Length: 274
Image 1 (spheres, one colour):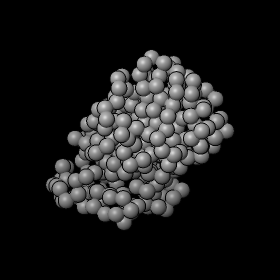
Image 2 (cartoon, one colour):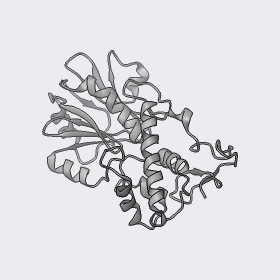
Image 3 (spheres, rainbow, N blue to C red):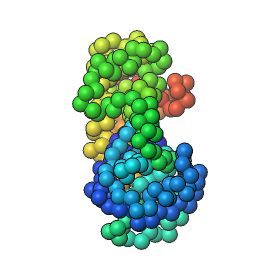
């Protein structure tokens, strides 16, 4: 599933192409991507709406439409792209939401397996949604001490806590694996057992790795594409994720993998993350 760097890349690509543009019309091919809104209501509010801004919250792209916000969670197979010309047959086949713009281009949400979600929120709905999500790790005000407070209140494995969107926004499996390795922390260690020094290292590495991934336009293994349809490049820089059984690039120890922490693959080095 796209994480913070992937969605941030999409948003940065879309922002100059969408801000100030008016949606002339909108069509929806399937209702199963909708959450908390009907097809009729969604299309009625999109028709004629002007995009006042585009931003990211956690792993979601948000289009500010004034009285409403369209919230897009791409899921594992979704992409959000502004097309300059007609869609190719393959692009049109999986286009779930299509919205022609007043400059002749078209905003398209494409989702091969329809694992993503679309929400349309008014001000009250937005406040509830936003308030249920933890702090953004790249915000200037998010400090190592703030991270320590989040971790200190939980006995769960540290990897599970930093992936919990209620504690920290936007970090998923890929970047949790990478940050814990870079910080030298065992991903199964109880969060409340970490020291202030652990907090500082983990805070530094989460921010550093997320920044680096954004500069590389995210990580593409299969379906993720940027807001202009390109592949990301951070997969070339991963040190542990996807490398189970390969030698650690720091010490040469064979990297181990487990699903016992949070039912996702956790790849780590027994020597570097004691």
